[in-house]
Length: 266
Ligand SMILES: Nc1ncnc2c1ncn2[C@@H]1O[C@H](COP(=O)(O)OP(=O)(O)OP(=O)(O)O)[C@@H](O)[C@H]1O
Image (cartoon, rainbow, N blue to C red; front, side, top):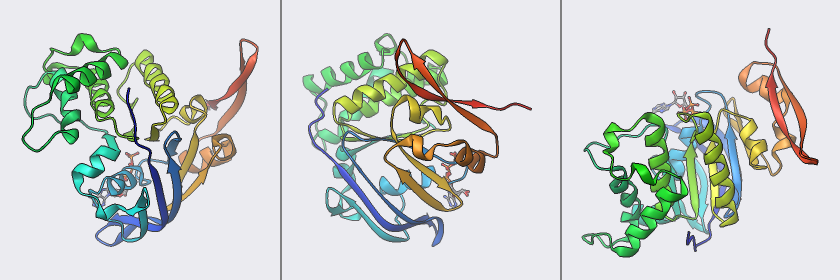
């Protein structure tokens, strides 16, 4: 797909939260197009709060948030939506649009205020459905889809937006095993297209599968590593989730393998 623009996100000494009460303090973090960053943290750690701030839904309490060198608050919502596409945790589509229409909505940020989608927009929407391997759902009412099918449609909508940064809030949470792996593979493909992906996940293995960078949120602070293996460790996972996890190297077909997590059961 034709992702053309690049994006650099730069957060410096920022506090995020609600009504002046910080959920995350003194956050400093930078990412570029082509980076995949997995965000790990327990329930309530602040992952969605970070995302809502980056999307301009809530304002940071303090600090600097720059997108391509410009303060985030300077962007109009449509300009921001051309740079950042978002897949939220819950999907609410009020009317019975078809899945194809929902994906086509992703093109709205590229249209004039009263313009209708044109041929090119329809081609891009249909390609986004194909990319997620859900073209067969195009004519089905969104409200009649299963939770996992809706999730795949919403990811397609975000792809149709053709933004250089994609924020995904637990994108695999509703999906069956096959679709989870498919979504992870698509995220890898997006990296080849120089799209940046910032994704919250409760599966530390995702960071290893994607060979991603990693953000750890714990007790109001955020740490970051360019190499997830250095920060996603048994000690850190114990701190975050309060469970014992072993991490193994698994060679695949003679190739250097990747790490996998195995929780220790009592
Ligand atoms: N609108 C709000 N007003 C005040 N506090 C809020 C609001 N939304 C969330 N919070 C609080 O902010 C904290 C972080 O919540 P957030 O949703 O960012 O966590 P999360 O890491 O995304 O969690 P999860 O993994 O459960 O989705 C929580 O303590 C939550 O109660």
